[in-house]
Image 1 (cartoon, helix red, strand yellow):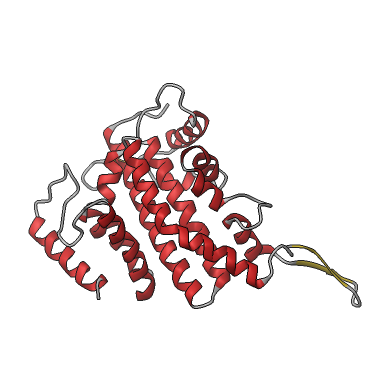
Image 2 (tube, rainbow, N blue to C red):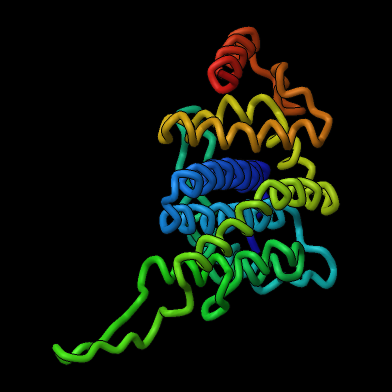
Length: 271
């Protein structure tokens, strides 16, 4: 089993928070594309929003030692086996870290994990050959329809499960559930006593680091959508997002500078 040093566990928790931020931006992108009637790319972004959200929960789960009768022991052992084989890298301050642990989470891992932990998310994410689920819709976008033709007669032999109207209808249903899925995920972290990751996500440091790390890659409408989801989560948890709050247990020597940066970001995102 993985050598659970504080450094490596912190790295897994940090990867979990970054995956959560990634899920927020994919959600914002899915919503914006859908409203602009780009249904196919919206379906892909919405699928990846739930995939990364589930990945964030898996990483948070693996950052704590297994409990007796762990229902995910096979997934945990598989991931930890991969992490053990990675050679740690060293930062300039001498501390070691793993390459991003999220890279070892496979697409089938997420719905299997969620089916036991958050079944509603698993149902929306779905699987192959389950029409109306995000995975099936993503594969339809990428690979369907398929056709054979002899030059006179064409036969559509796969990927005909969606008409344009039904595709948009299914996708709209998933998008309407997204905000609640994020709320459920934060609640799940608390129920599972994975409070380190939950506290990081709800802190000002999450905005200054994980959120800020990604927001420059997206256009303003997507950033605003992601931000709307995030601050609604803070308000649901009774957290004042308007004021900079460092991650609990973390002290920044340049805290005044961090507070100014935070105020600037809030002003930019709230326009």
